[in-house]
Image (cartoon, rainbow, N blue to C red):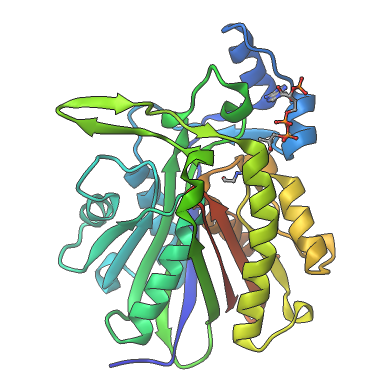
Length: 326
Ligand code: UT7
């Protein structure tokens, strides 16, 4: 049976315990002859620390903890879930999906489970897909997760990228609802920019070929991000029949405080409506938005009934936004 709306009924997140400050990282990189500093990283990005998973901890493991917290917050158990979508660019294996592995770890079977790969926009894509599946009656209770172990694909000889990223997971339970939750979404990709943010390795003939470590042209990504984030925000506001003034909270992908503040300024939002976790999490790619959302819910910033703008941007090039009522 189709339903008019989908709505978030619970959020959860999980960070691996090992917290690495900029000074810790600078010391580690100095041992490799690479110079960086807390001052440079804070000034250019806003990042002060990130979390790194231990070598045997996978995305699905981080996803499991975040999912349990989200299910608990929603008052649901894993057996209530009839759809699992995991947004990740650092899956446990080439295949099967981390969503299938997560399903098994949750102790359930049968419901559809699949990964979405849209890099740092992955959670926006996954939420958009889950919303559409709920509104068409394919699912009623979806677990939507962003989970990453970007530390696995960082090139620790490249100071322009390795200081930016971290590991973590965030999750939401999205359920069929008679009252509006997700108000509008807007997702895009432009594959002509593949080369500016990529991990250009693959498995072929039993070997990894190409470069299996992250490469980014930071300035090119920065310029594109600022432009497309404003466009996506304006589009979802228009689709939902809302204006800038209706936004209670802006939760952008947590990559760089300067991009986030630039977007808030363009939307004429005061900085105290911007949810910021990048200082403590770094850029956790597909996990960053649900991690920030859960942090804001748990510390009492985002409350039931608030109107929240989520925005993602990343490799692909991909971007998008979701406007929702909590
Ligand atoms: O998740 C997807 C979205 N990703 C993003 O949004 C990332 C977007 N890009 C950015 O956030 C920024 O471009 C960066 C943070 C990556 C770089 O900041 P920037 O202000 O664009 O710096 P830059 O690349 O222009 O580098 C400035 C200087 C350079 O030195 P010279 O050429 O001026 O002598 C770099 O070599 O800073 C140097 N530099 C560093 N110095 C100390 C680059 N990385 C570091 C470092 N520590 N880690």
